[in-house]
Image (tube, protein in one colour):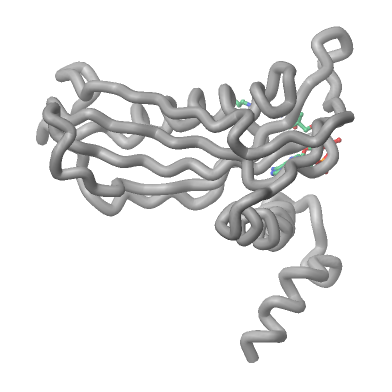
Length: 173
Ligand SMILES: CC(C)(COP(=O)(O)OP(=O)(O)OC[C@H]1O[C@@H](n2cnc3c(N)ncnc32)[C@H](O)[C@@H]1OP(=O)(O)O)[C@@H](O)C(=O)NCCC(=O)NCCS
């Protein structure tokens, strides 16, 4: 299977925040934002994997700044690393006013998607990612630790077997 670059699947979703998207304070509901992030992430993952994907996990999401009614948000989704049947996607959310000014970063998150074979609906192999820029290489390298942590938290990996994560913390000592 041919390797693919980050740029091959980069996905940008833009939404105008409407009254139906907000809470009683006039701010975007967190759940609505997470739904859009899930969609943008799955489009990005589907482009990389060239197949249908399902969301396997969503890492810690925190909301630093409220997004107001009438703001325009941009959700940027990129693949950080492909494993065997899964890919990690990095999502960044920016909000600006309708003129495109006053842009602030609202939040970011990592999500993991698994590619499914369309006949068997079983996980299928995905193309490797070929990171190019230094930032892409940084995210590629650190993805292994994030994967170990989320597999520990979901009960799929024992902490003692998290080799890269343990080495990382040992280096900090
Ligand atoms: C995700 C899913 C396909 C994994 O199926 P499975 O039978 O456990 O398959 P496997 O054990 O072979 O794991 C497949 C991949 O999923 C990854 N995975 C499974 N659970 C994970 C989790 N909680 N977090 C991160 N990755 C996970 C595995 O690490 C593996 O990745 P790899 O092949 O790149 O190493 C299955 O659990 C599923 O269908 N879940 C529901 C998905 C869904 O409906 N999402 C929307 C919720 S509304």
